[in-house]
Length: 121
Image 1 (cartoon, rainbow, N blue to C red):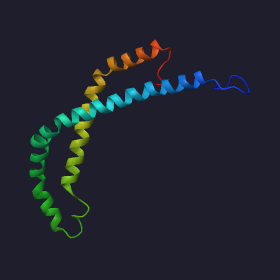
Image 2 (image 1 turned 180 degrees about the vertical axis):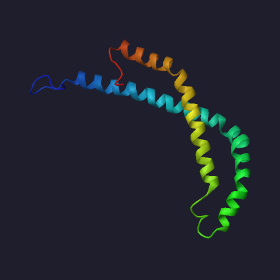
Image 3 (image 1 turned 90 degrees about the vertical axis):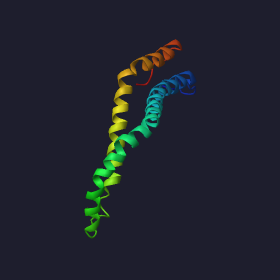
Image 4 (image 1 turned 90 degrees about the horizontal axis):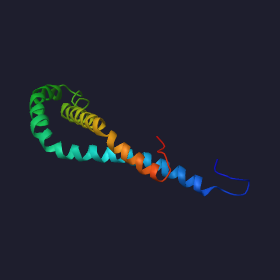
């Protein structure tokens, strides 16, 4: 309840709710930033050791698809391949971060408790 009476607004309650949501958002943002950093660190290695060899494997298949009138417009194996590899790598990185993220969440929650606020989630 934000209002303490009909005419007054409890600004402390509003501030507590905002900070609780911010603590939650900090966890999400930190996870996202850590995932992006690891993705960037691995990008060149994945491109060299995974994407390029796989592209070479699907090239003859794509050439055959391109010879079929109209089908090549709908099936771009290189785009599909890049999307799948990116999804797998991001999923793996996210799982790795999830496994070790408990300590970060704990530190954020403890910082909130120091000021008397519990994270929204």
